[in-house]
Length: 587
Image 1 (cartoon, rainbow, N blue to C red):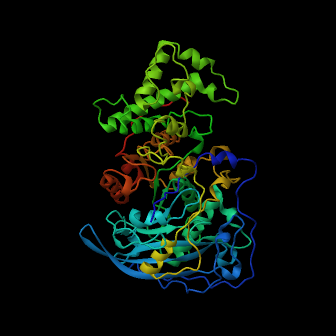
Image 2 (cartoon, rainbow, N blue to C red):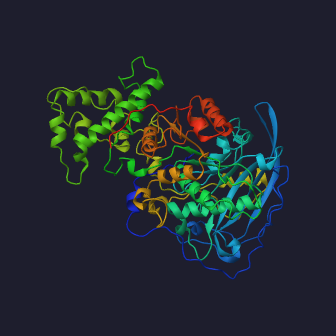
Image 3 (tube, rainbow, N blue to C red):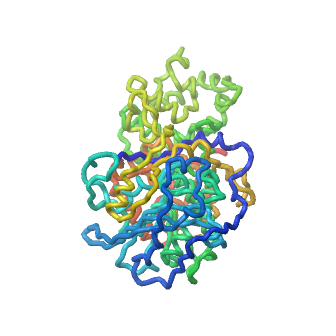
């Protein structure tokens, strides 16, 4: 199995900003015969799921059904699943659990199964030896947008990992227990958004009707509600774990779930906390704060440039400083960079560039000092000498260097850095994975479902749908919270409002030091501007985009942070353990 985390390309926001919104399509009441809604009974004392919905053969699905206009006919929309018990040896304890795979129908609130939106596929792992009402459950989402959840399961958060290579890409390799799973802390549900996995829209909807920031979050909210009702998880503490774009959609889903409350639950519950927390792994919380094709400062990326340069031993700014102290000082320089951007060289980004203030500035002693600090921290360019120009110092030509430019100019004699992890160089002439639009079909995922769970789908499993990302709609729906303009490409208002609806909502942000796609300091500054610095800790590790076990040094520290997150009693107490370490940026 080749790991390909679904990376977020920030430039697509511009292409999706021309008029309209991604609000719900008109309500339609179909007349087809659906299976009767599953009526959950009182929750048992174990997390073993109730009998799953019956498996009903349907027409085989082809790759074309995952196109923007793809959809299922009413007669082919079915809830199906299979389950199998297993055990895992974890931290010296044998844990019994049930693995379930299948699909559920997400329907608009208040409409039951008779105003269905989409069939959503999922893979779940539920611990069998603890009371269900007290047992946390976490819904896991990948990014892209256009990524399924499969690669967040095997060897990442799920209970199994491969134990050696597979004979081919079409089958799963031998399996063993995954020591990095969080199944000891929480049940896990890996969810495939519409157009990925085996998830498809149901007529009269089309797949692309759910390829937008708000419409995607709504249908996934409705899936969570359906899952909660089918498997009697109304009283369970509930969490969302989102990676990359999944970390952008999670705050929107959180707001929608908290606004809905328990109104759509089919079993009465006195527990009014429908969501306990969010884990946001490598999120781009506010895309408009990124400087790739946006007229804004790249200061939030400067600390990442510094960490990458230090890893490759091209930075001279660290000296004898420890890694965390160096990162803190790089944050301070990033803040200085942003202040100078707005005061001196923002005009170099304009459609009609005005370079005179910048060129005047670098003739002054303070300007030369600034250029030398850029070189010392990032390893790009050179120490300034009289007569230097844009021909021999890239910072003179491009003072607001975005991450893509940085990957090209960092070490041109060696090649381009990987955007997802600046510790590595890309293959010559290769397309960076962040720009890859190739659709991947994961036969190994189907093989895993069949062998480990006994679930055999007739549909191709879409690991990544390359047709989604470039037509994704970031425009907010009308009549949502606050100022719609503030929500365009920005989920921080949703996060802020979610923490108002539930003051005890726990949120943790995870980042890798070497991630050039979603730089860690951008999230810190975005949260600061949203007034969330002391409520939302940002944990940074020696890893890349989508900090994961196989590419992250000292992953045990990350696991300790996750343990503390799930064990922690409240958002405020948890966040207090991670005070901010960067300076105020001028507005």
